Structures are given as C-alpha cells and as structure tokens.
Image (cartoon, rainbow, N blue to C red):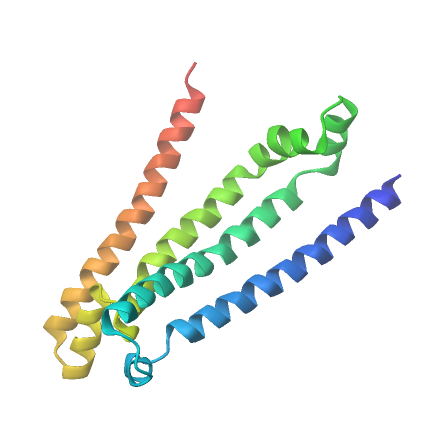
Length: 187
C-alpha cells in the first residue's frame, strides 16, 4: 500500500512540475507583452485611450501572474509537508478526498500558504513601480524621471513612498497573523 501511495504522490509531483512550467511560461509571456515600449505600440496606430486601458490591464494581469509563483510554491510545499499518515487517517475515518483537503491538509498547510501570500503581496508593491516603464503610471514614474534626470529628490519622492507601502503591507500581514494567533489562543 505504501508503494502505491508513493507512486500516486510522485504522479502528483510530476503534474505539479508541469503546472509550474506552464505558469512560469505565462508569466514570461505576459511580462514580455507588458514591457513592450509605448512608442512601438503607438506607431502601430493604436488609440491612446485604448492603449492606456490595455496597459493598465496588462499590469494587473502581470502582477497577478507574478504573485502566483510564491503562492503556488508555498501551497505545494505546505501540502507536501502534511504527513501522509494524517491524510490516510482522515480517509480511514470516512472523509472524502475533498473533505480531507479542506479539513485536514489545508489547515495544516495554512501557515506556509499564508507566507506565500504575504511574500507575493509585498513583492507586488515593489514590482508595481515598474509599470511606469510601459506608461501605466504610479510611483514608478517619479523613479524613472529621477533616474533620467539624475535628480535624487524626484527619485526618492517615488522610491520612499513605494518602500513605505511595502513595509505597511508587510506589517499589516504580520499584525494580522499576530492578532489571529492571539485570538486563536484565547478561550
């Protein structure tokens, strides 16, 4: 029985690797499309209003896809870290596979999964500043302008708020986790 369990787990791992490759390929594709120079797209005769709408959408899609990798990896690591004995015991008690996932595996993998969400959110705040390179705005415009003009004040007027926002997001997650663990420990 243990041999079949390992074979099933190896099959799941190989399917996860294929999914990771597909997600990574989509991330690269969206990043390439999202980083096309604005002037190149404008020379193709695309309407300016439509261009900014599409660029904004591409930024959101790219940030979403960038966030998937740490979340998927941490979810996989968390679920892989749950002992097979616990899953087998849940199945032996009559839980279905979905019930086992929902009531046993996901709660045990939650700290690792939430660490992936926290990492993704914090990284996305910094990554969003790169939207300025395709003309989508944000604090990145100040950073790019400061770099182009070699003006440290303008550069810092974009970099400092972006860094503070990343720290606020990180601190918000840490405060929420501290509150959650404190609330869970009280009767």
